[in-house]
Amino acid sequence: MPGSTMKQPSRLATVLRVTSGNFLEMFDFFLYGFYAPYIATTFFPSGNDTASLMLTFATFGAGFLMRPVGAVILGSYIDRIGRSKGLVLTLAIMALGTVLIAFVPGYASIGLLAPALVLIGRLLQGFSAGVEMGGVSVYLAEMATPDTRGFYVSWQSASQQAAIMAAALIGYGLNQVLSAQQVHDWAWRVPFFIGCLIVPVIFVIRRSLQETAAFQARTHHPSFRESILSIAANWRLVVAGMMMVVMTTVSFYLITVYAPTYGKSVLKLGAGDSLLLTFCVGLSNFIWLPVMGALSDKVGRRPLLMTFTILAMLTAYPVLSWLVHDVSFGHMLIAELWLSFLYASYNAAAVVTLTEVMPPEVRTVGFSLAYSLATALFGGFTPLVSTWLIELTDDKAAPGLWMAAAALCGLLSVLMVYRRDAAAPDMVADTV
Image (cartoon, helix red, strand yellow):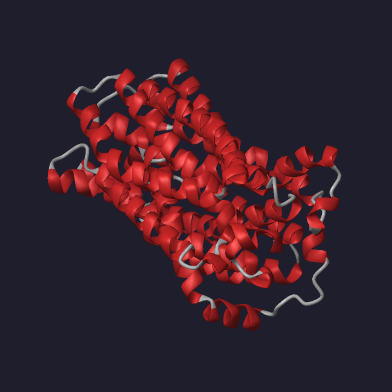
């Protein structure tokens, strides 16, 4: 494989460079989810707290609607001009959206312009994120050898967990040194400012990325029109990939972005407890992702995908039901760590599978479109859907039903992808 010519000592540095943008993206996304109640009162005031919170999560979800657009436009661009140049562009667009959210005055100062600018910031972030994960995953897949691909691609998701832990620690520190009113009034913006400050550092790091040997070895790089025609011809594969990612994206946003709001607003835990729980979940994900990615290299992708979709279907709702009937910090930690284990074990196999089944010439746009469609239609609206389900059913464990449904979708996709042995990702993995 071309990617195998990369010298071993450079692999760690390369992983850090390529995943740095993923770190920033998830840092900002997690902050939006955790500080949703404060963002709601700052930009979306309403006489009803639930309505205000749902407007905030609707804006959060709107950013995901831009992901398919970014996947097609930026994904085809990266497949044409190269992985390294494309990842620098996505970082620049993402940074602009972050700056908007960090510095926009509240509704009380500029009226309707405030939520409008926040929405624009989320749309820019979504446009960039539509290809960020795909670009990073494809880069890692192309730099790895066939027998280590699962391990290396898992660091795309692991970098997001590092961001979650960093954001949780910053938020926990703010809650320890400042009053609840200070955090509500202005201090919730501090982590966003920190995100703006690290942008130049990550930009410099990403500019040093070398192009992958696998991309350089190709003699033809498709035009935008050729990319669209190829994706259209492989639409069944894109749909199967989208279904596979539904389990990943719904479970991820449930246990990370939505969990702090769930702990504070639904279960009435303290803000510090919610942040500490989220840090533990991020750490759990960070550990399990590379472990299970390496395991998928040894035993294959399919056994992990099958096992953990079934486990999620059977346990997601019962675990949350157990939690809400006896709410405590310890019980929520146990529930979150179990769901974390399910998410990380499935995700470690699913993401690398997606890089392996897409045609090489449109690998970035194909991966990104499948991933972004799943996030736009399902995962990105998980906080909103969870809030709505609890309100509709008066059942605080209802988000578990949403995760179980996502797991069923993932199981069906695995059966589709592995329908014929000749099409099994494990058998075509060396073509990356």
